[in-house]
Each structure stands twice: as C-alpha cells, then as structure tokens.
Image 1 (cartoon, rainbow, N blue to C red):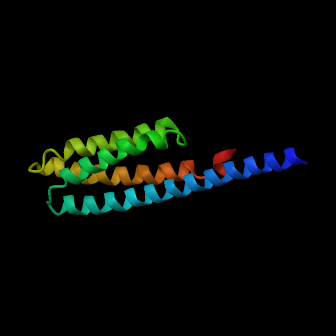
Image 2 (image 1 turned 90 degrees about the horizontal axis):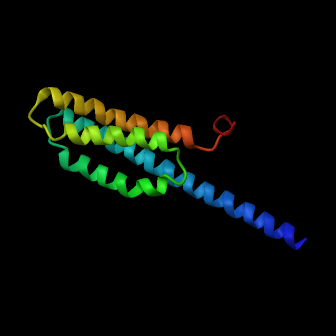
Image 3 (image 1 turned 45 degrees about the vertical axis):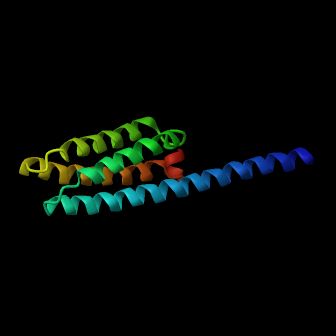
Length: 128
C-alpha cells in the first residue's frame, strides 16, 4: 500500500510539473507573438526596432536552454533562425526593401511561436 501511495505521488508530481511547464510555454509563446505583432507594426511605420529585436534574441538565448528540455530541437531551431534573420534585417533601418522583409520576418517569428505552442501542447493529437 505504501508503494502505491509513493508511485501515485510521483505520477502526480510529474503531471503537475508538466502542467506548470506547459502553462509557462503558453505564456511565453503568446507573449512573443504579441510582441512580434507590435514590433512589425512599428517597423512598418518606419521606426527603428533593432534594439528591441536584439533584446528578443537575448531573451530567447537565455530561455532556450530551459525550452530544450521540453520542446523538440527542430522547432527551436526554426524559431531561432527567424529571430536571427529579423535581427540581421533590423541592422538596415534605412533600406525600404529590408524594412518590408523585416516586417514579414517579425510576423514569421510570431507564427513560429504559435506553431511551437500548437505542436508542443498536451493533446491526444500530439501524443499519438
């Protein structure tokens, strides 16, 4: 009987940790999507968003080691490549071509964050 209590406690602990990490991932990806939508509007209006994009890349680098424990690496790499491309494009604020590409790339970052959440959330479709 004691073993059953210990085993059920461990299962409950694992499920609780999974729910907490899923909630954190949801908040992070939703926040990233909203931030990218705002930055793309600012870039489309002609503002220089290079500093903000570098801050997003810095935050991403810090969070990536924690995300790597629960998320597939290929999805992390895809999101990281979009962020790095946006950071590179933000270095050319005077070029109209680069500004248009930056707006699109920022929207791609937001879409990749939403896709990351959809592919990693706990659901029967993702489990099986």
